[in-house]
Image (cartoon, rainbow over all chains, first blue to last red; front, side, top):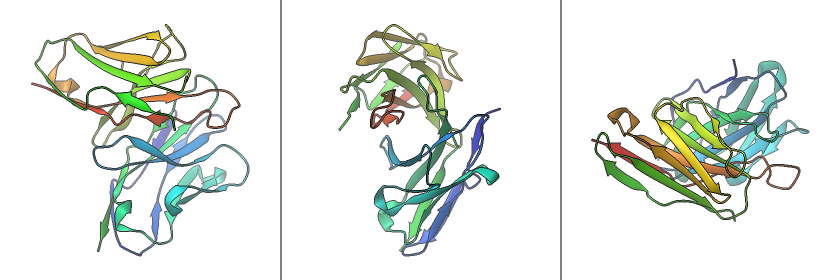
Amino acid sequence: AQSVTQPDIHITVSEGASLELRCNYSYGATPYLFWYVQSPGQGLQLLLKYFSGDTLVQGIKGFEAEFKRSQSSFNLRKPSVHWSDAAEYFCAVGAGNQGGKLIFGQGTELSVKP
Amino acid sequence: DVKVTQSSRYLVKRTGEKVFLECVQDMDHENMFWYRQDPGLGLRLIYFSYDVKMKEKGDIPEGYSVSREKKERFSLILESASTNQTSMYLCASRRTGGVPGANVLTFGAGSRLTVL
């Protein structure tokens, strides 16, 4: 079955510390992979996406993610977290072709300590 | 920028009422989606639409229906609201094909529905 797992429901990091949010997927075809961020009371905003090519992708707000096919993972990283990064983060996978639907993970809530 | 507008940010309805959630996008996207978001469950797909007058069931369609009479508008209908439909509802749209920005979902701000 197709699925996305974000193992960490809630993570707390100190401001200025590095961050890694984990995402593992199960998908039969070549996946399109996404990370979205949701600030409180808002819709989801795209952080970055992977369709093909270089497995290390850069996104907005200083985030990056690395696609590792052998581990079925697409972990999100940021070298230095800012207080404004506190939000909920969602990993998603899809076929990307016309009509394909995205499957979302359960989300990871990030808290940032001063 | 693409804008996806959900007309109601907060609604309070009573059990048994018929509820309409409206979503409009302004960039001529072919695909539109309705998701439900609940804590610990992430986003779950209710219905989606490839194009006008086309619809497909998602993972949790029970208790919901949809309407897409015009390309820019996708409505979610709760025929008889129940308390277990209290949730955040997110609409999204997507352009398909080999053009820049294709295959990326753009979300509205969400509609938080409370059913009493």
